[in-house]
Image 1 (spheres, rainbow over the protein chains, first blue to last red):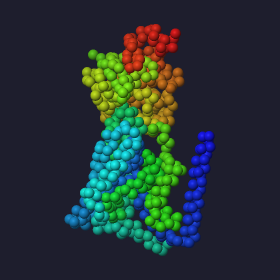
Image 2: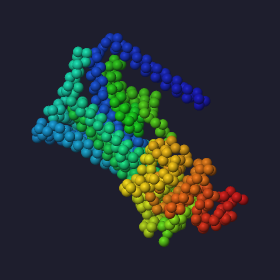
Image 3: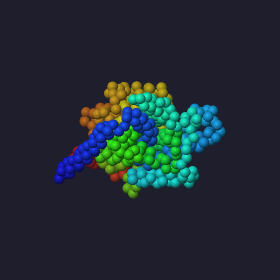
Amino acid sequence: MKERKVSLGLLLRLGIGLLVLAFFAYRFYGVLARQAYGAETWARLAISGLIIGSVYAVIALGYTLVYGILFMINFAHGEVMMIGAFAGYFVLEAFAASGFSARQPVLAILITFLAGMTVSMLVGISLERIAYRPLRGAPRLVPLISAIGASIFLQNAAQLMFGSMRRTYSNPPALERNVGWVLDVAGKPVSITYTGVLTFAFSVVLMIGLYLLVQRTRLGRAMRAVAENKEAAALMGVDVDRVIANTFAISGVLAGAAGVMWGLHNGIIYHYVGFIPGLKAFTAAVLGGIGNIPGAMLGGIVLGIAESLAPAVLDMPFQLKDVLAFAVLVLVLIFRPTGILGEVLAEEKV
Amino acid sequence: MALLEVHNIHTYYDHIHALKGISFELDRGEIVALIGANGAGKTTTLNTISGLRHPREGSIIFDGQPIHHLPAHEIVQLGIAQVPEGRKIFSRLTVMENLDMGAFTRRDRAGIQEDLERVFKLFPRLKERRNQLGGTLSGGEQQMLAIARALMARPRVLLLDEPSMGLAPILVESIFQTITEISQQGMTILLVEQNANMALSVAHRAYVLETGRIVLSGPAAEVRENPQVRAAYLGEA
């Protein structure tokens, strides 16, 4: 009886998989046969995918860090990023008005990032303190609902404080959007924007920094110990609550940096700006294997490139890229719920 | 004055009254065994001392200082380390990292290095496997690591919870030999065991626990000769 059920599910999954693959191959063949896009378009798509993917990766790390320690999805994480984006926005506005941005662009950008990261860090810490810590030890669904509530609260708070209009980041003149180096691909120009390079480079720096923090420092070791067994970590003298607060602080710093990068590179922010990138980064974290740090990095980059290329590959309108990104989430959950680098956590962690 | 005094502690799990007024003491340099069946409250007693649980009534005095209201991480710092039931080593940390975790509260580099050499001398196997992940060790090696990790805190009292659990008889022998060795170096040890025979052979004194109460206590040799203990815990008729 039981065996038949299993084989039926497997058959179903196989069927869906073949269908998806066949569809994929059919559409891609059509695109190639028509030569719908030249090499320069593919290059452009890949580059923009890589850039947006690196931002997803940085946000995804925040989901994965918190999940690794508390086994909960911090659904308010996208809003932490949004608040960071706003903090950076106001700092840049002031700098632009005073002319500081034009005189000292490097310093201005640096301070903008610091402001975004610090504010997001404080939001992350408060979130844990107010919305999650009182629910420690409650069934896992409870903090999840609290997270959704916190997300709605932060969105509405931002709307009340900042209004619902879209605001444009005032980049320093030296870091104008859509300006950059121009490459020559098959005789056509492909531009690589300065903001894009900054975003990608800073994302890589953050990822390396986080990796070193987790692997090489005392706090990192304590975080890994708490992730594995809170009671055993406490018996080693680790203040578990403090490590959890630090984890939220670190994931807030990353979200704040991502928010400022989002503003600098994409230009427009509003109270809802964290929602979709938050969901995408969550998808990326699941794709890479939730709880796994290199997985979140890989998942972010892969998702960014995939969503950027997919509409072209599947010969679909580019507006469908969000749909395709979330289709990835569905497919991962069907075929490999543990993600690309996911470990088998199920038994040991519950 | 005893190093560790437990006075009439009552510990609850929600509505379950797990410890119903337990009192005992631990003198410097002693090995004291707590024996009893499953569910008697042995692990709860250790966790209450370690601060993972807090007693609703009663007090725990360590070296003259009440500690029953302190969180677990502060109690380690005062000098009470626990080797938890089921070892609970960090399987995704290397052996070295596990040992570093043991010394988490310490800052004295030289002292940590000294203790590291001491535990490697006690357990040469761990030195060979220092860069392996904890999860790849065998059960016996994991128990060695759990004890070594606790020693890295340089505790004044070592709480051992079921060190014989799940180990082959020959490994049990060697673990208990090590416990005796550690004791001879001056450590005060509170040993919780279901393997009453082994525990009573190394302990100086023993307490017998039954459903949250101490029903018998005395020098280990005397407890061992008690007819009820022999029938209930030593498998003798």
